[in-house]
Length: 431
Image (cartoon, rainbow, N blue to C red; front, side, top):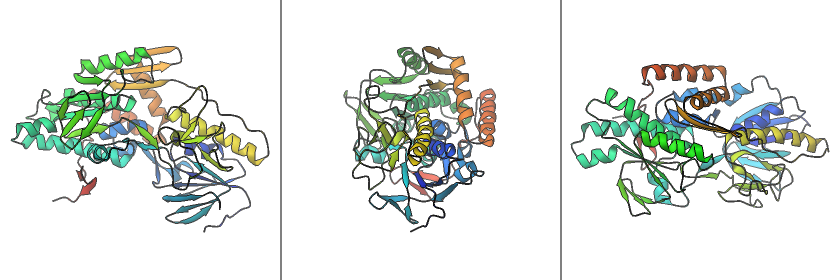
């Protein structure tokens, strides 16, 4: 077991996402020792993963080394580790690098893709919740376009050129819009022999409208933009099965496709050992108003993995970056209140608005009572996302890449770095 170097309270944070980073930053000058554990040594800006998957921006422009973020924070340390179990009775965490002790533990592990128990969908569809998955998605798209050029089987070509996005939230809408834009601007330019009429893009959503968390106006406009770009939208339907070729929908329809991208649900990524914790819908850890896990005294949960259930949020707060960032900052204050024996303050979420882009010059924005669509919303979306990236180099890289892509109507990042097998989820050696 590791040993603490000081008598100061040790706060162990599991996860280097938006919530965990914000908590650690806000404790910079506090008389505590912070240890962050993560299975990756980098922070990922998840809202732009779909652009990596589409080859619009390079992968390293939306990830940033965690250690680099905290270079000048003396009370912070980081270990690359996978958490195997939480031992709340001993105030320790079991990891692949040993057992680590804590005075306060914060679970900020985020969320993972929810396949709702369907193993076939988990095996055959493509999720996009982290950087390796985004790169796998990019490789699969490009591999299938290469196969479509050379195949003599028209039915197989049609399946390779049919893309189905499942889930009509921001990720699904943005990915569908990017696919439609690729078909319109890039396909015939780069893939000679393929026509934009060969490529079909479908969006399947279980609710009766897209972007259900946004205003009715934003929902209608998003559907209008996608439909204008020839995205075929099915609302109020659900996927029943997918075997790698046949996608069956509960309205009786079957689509033959080699490309099904799953953006239909998320679930909390709960570490082993949280036996006393109550899990809500979507496997989120239920906490009290200060993000303390119910059933524990010194264990907290923030971000996508956590759910504060109250009258305003009966299902917990939305799983978006602003919630995670605000909970991280709020918990930093409350941890210091607890350490100093002071009263704590219940978390209050300030909704600053929601944005979603549907492609070139098209986006929707709900900012309080103000609603924007079109070019201005698209500029606002771009500005917010660039400013939210970690590191000046990443901000500059994304801005310059977007500017070049905008004027050239093309991209330089559609690269097959390594082959990918969807069924095995494995990177295959080159032959």
